[in-house]
Length: 374
Image (tube, rainbow, N blue to C red; front, side, top):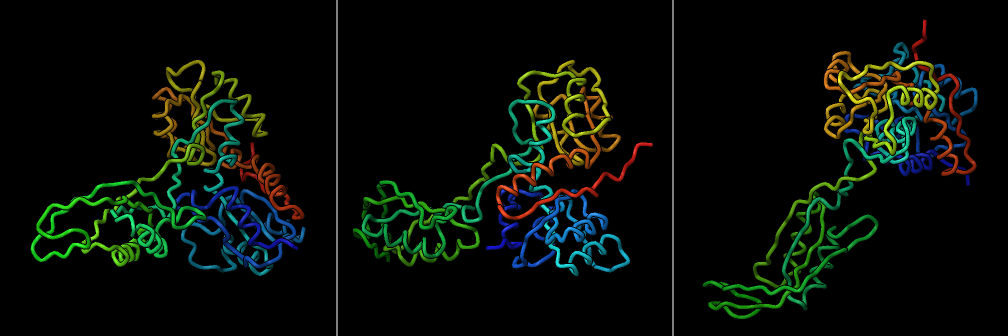
């Protein structure tokens, strides 16, 4: 059965889940219909008209553009605007556009991990960790239920949306519990009598819930619970950081390296002849902790320094940010924005080929940095 654009979306979602992309970013399927057939896809960092025409000549059905061509609050599509013209041409040619951008940076085995490989081997962790708290696990609902009513209350809460964890529903935990109450004047307790302290053998029932479903879950709990005043606790749940997913990387080298050694290794890895290096004032001769971020990573410098990084590798940084880093003893290595990204495309191609047998993936030969050395 032939592949469709939806298959590509699903494969990219597995490799680089969009939920871990930056909130400011514009990622995912940007142009096209998920039902379109897919035989050939092109990979590029920047989707220029030159790259799109190359894709058209190859009868491509989709372009995976790392940098999203629809960005910065684009409000109109007109042929006279170069950015709009590329999007219009793709749409009129039924060529889908997918952009992974910061989701691919954050993913394990993605762009940033590849950049770290160019420095050396060692332990790698995100500078800023992504979180894995699912939308159905935003809070925990706790109640105390008589033994003979636990199944009914659990079922009612689950039917209302509580207890959903991934592909599983009606998930719960119940623990043996002793409850006490003193029914006041006018009360009508389901167990025992008013006017005296009662002790009841109960189960403490706990189920997660989304904030959206919470009102329905609480209503279902109260309707199924036998008590006149069901005990209910709603506990907000904190985000859970992921050990291998997030923004930037801190690489703890297995063997510390000098700046010269790191530069030599990076040049070979990125396929470039020059790098820009600003040596940290009073910094160490050998670096063990190295911060990395493809593209423009200056915003992570402070967090990288807090993680003990004495070297920071990225594509580009603002002049005064570099000066500040040097004054703090941090060595900065700049590869050029897309030079820190483009070399990953063959690896992404190979991963997509493995995920979608029978579909052809090609890295553009017309995609290049806009800079030339004069």
